[in-house]
Image 1: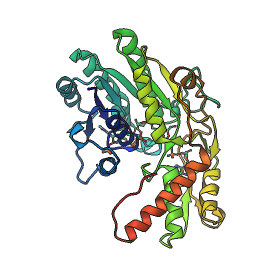
Image 2: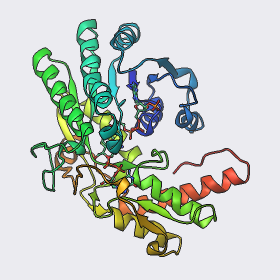
Image 3: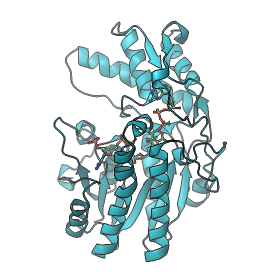
Image 4: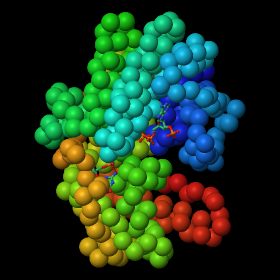
Length: 336
Ligand code: NAP
Ligand code: G4F
């Protein structure tokens, strides 16, 4: 049986990857952080998924800021595959806490790779790299596009990207970077723009909110569907040779288009509800991200199925169902 260690297992991607690996027959060890409130809500959804095998999922307290915790885990678990998804992942927040972001999102990668190297465990390694690394480089972006990060988060991810390449070249570790463009779902954190919009639309329909305040509506992103993206992570570690891949849909849409589609889906005109406020703008913005996933299609056989309109509709429908269930007193979260 294959054994996987997943950092960030309580996050959007970590929860889908955990679900995916359990369904493939893996023993999954997930890292969770100490928190004063519950932070395993997404894993509760995993536990309700079809074919869930709870006896094959173990959670461990550890932290990317604590190298000993990661080294001990890798030595004890001896994973075949390590997926490093843990991060301070919010771009706007990284301007407020740049040093912490550099430590967890950047140096955390060194801690993971050093733990693998020092333990001598021959684990394959996946690094959650990001399209945010391309920053100011004009679209379309692919594996050959130069990085020009525009945030402390982007800078930390560039450091992690090159650290991953370096451990591959220096020590022969099977280490790959997935350069993932934005990917969303009903499990997306509520402060990222897509979920903020889908949740607000649902609340407006239910009469619980009157307006939605956003920042820059002109930014363009290449938005895909998160469950499809975790399969790409796994595919990278099944290849004979490690490599770096862009994962994207190849379509770009503005935040304004997302807002329009989300409100139109419930028969509303977005301009009646949406306001803008500069407090949601960033000191330096990434204007346009649009990925070229040709290498992943060719070498991994990976292709996105769910594109922009379907994604927006799924997210709005899921938030409407969630809200109605919560109001009806059912705490069941319906997934898309
Ligand atoms: P997410 O929902 O924000 O999840 C981040 C995870 O990291 C959470 O489980 C979080 O724990 C954990 N974490 C935060 N600080 C940590 C620390 N100090 N030690 C250990 N774990 C820590 O992010 P996501 O959207 O699933 O993204 C997964 C990864 O892919 C991240 O590295 C992100 O930067 C990267 N990425 C995401 C996208 C995207 O569009 N989603 C695109 C490209 C790259 P808590 O639950 O306790 O907060
Ligand atoms: O949803 P966002 O916060 O995502 P962003 O900054 O693109 O970062 C996400 O994708 C990256 C991949 O490129 C990941 F690496 C990263 O971890 C994260 O998952 O913002 C998207 C766009 C930005 O241009 C932002 O300025 O939406 C714009 N925006 C406009 N109003 C807003 C808002 N973003 C947020 N979060 N909140 C707003 O009110």
